[in-house]
Length: 163
Image (cartoon, rainbow, N blue to C red; front, top):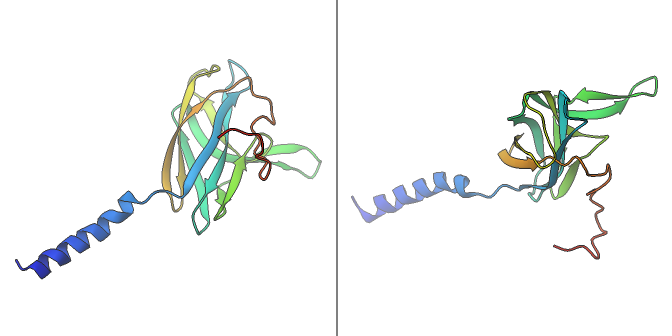
């Protein structure tokens, strides 16, 4: 084989290998899960998803090891003025260079048909599935003590915070 053939083969192999080494533009900050009580049949996970990439991505689904079904949900006000929880089949856009919060009272990952009880400090394995970034596996702690607004990201107000 000539040097030219070897170089071409190496370049081709490297071009196929590079996507495997590419870093995802998606990161997850401050994830936690909770349930209403020890005998709950449902629970939820909350977090802030950051997209440092140059193009929007979309969280399209999620899986977990603690529920028969794991879905993306949101809360919306109905015509009577009552809040109701809805499955969001199209998922959530994570804007390029931005964040999307999955927070109590808003968008979240819903665990339906829990297959085990969840206690404070337990770990829930969750895989988030994005259109572009693919799968992002997380170990999410169960936090039954966190207040509703604890950990809310107040962008632009980072003074006095640690790392």
